[in-house]
Length: 519
Image (cartoon, rainbow, N blue to C red):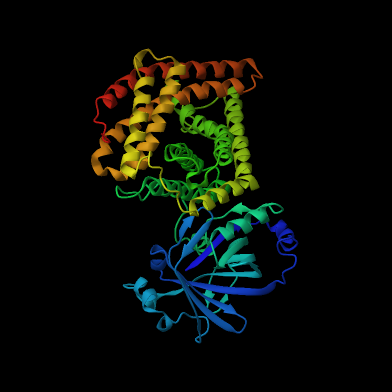
């Protein structure tokens, strides 16, 4: 079983790694690694989460088969089989053990052929501290896709740089990997990189189109202890968070990456809040980590606000005014409208770039490492006075949040904008808790959660209109015509806010009459 931690490294910082105090007294080993990855034309191995490569090491070839990884933050662990092959740059299935062959059952091995190549220089250091031992590898090179013939690849256009650190555990506790990475971060700007070289190579080959990663329900069940269920919830949220980092950094124009990242961030914050009911020190999540999560969300809010306004709120508002910038023939903007749209787009781009800077910062990498390390630790025993199992814990949390929501929604139709904002927050808190605990209740919670989602969406749309009006006030009013356009749009937003007030009142009544599935 391979256990490793992978981090991205800006190429210009490779020299800092080599001079780091952690490695200064250790003699490194350098070698060029040339690897060919194989699959069927339909990418059957990839679809099963299998990576098969043959790597040239000196004058020898080594075959490696890896199964799908289980990730905790930046760390992953996966079954791996590695062995020398005598046939050169081609896989030899006869030398695979039965467990590996079982993973390949049903795949026509005769159709397996080269897909892409990785070639990079690997510099390795062996780090030993007491019973803990790890190999730190610095990889600099590239992934290439082209016309592969045996061990060669002819020049092709599809290339992607490799610049990363891998820390692989050789002996001892996995926490050792996080300790080493944290020390490296003191002098080197490392980033989060959840993708293997194989995953990046497959994407470059066109085997799949990368897409934002949505939330998956955590693997919790009624028989679990409450602290084990909490740990599973946090791991699922952290996995979603990390999975959306590369997409947002490389394709920020796809606003769904930031949206899904923030969903994962909310789930983590929900988990931190829920841990308070399990006693102090659960999972080792301290006040500093909780504050770091809050600060990160606050830093990302402007980018999401501008994205929603530009891509959702503004088109609907212009359509209500009889204008539609998405249909050029129907919408011929005036010079002031052109100027307004340009200002809004520029603000959205600027806020996205600021959000990207937050995720490239070492503070974010340290936050991910701290969370990952905390979730590796064995959960502390539950206090006798606390909930004894996941089901009892979930029921107590859901009941408390439901009562809070009922309080916030009393006399719903008469709520002020500020009171609606508090109702929206209470709805979100109950929604995230209900989603997390849903596996404990089977289909019992489906109808209630659906009604809860409807209320959240309607309250969210009304809030989007409020946020849109606030953003419009931040736009400099350079001309009279621009001020006029801003006023028209803001007026339409106020109409939309009033309309949603009546809709959400009906949706709240529907939710209030639903059966509370945890009772």
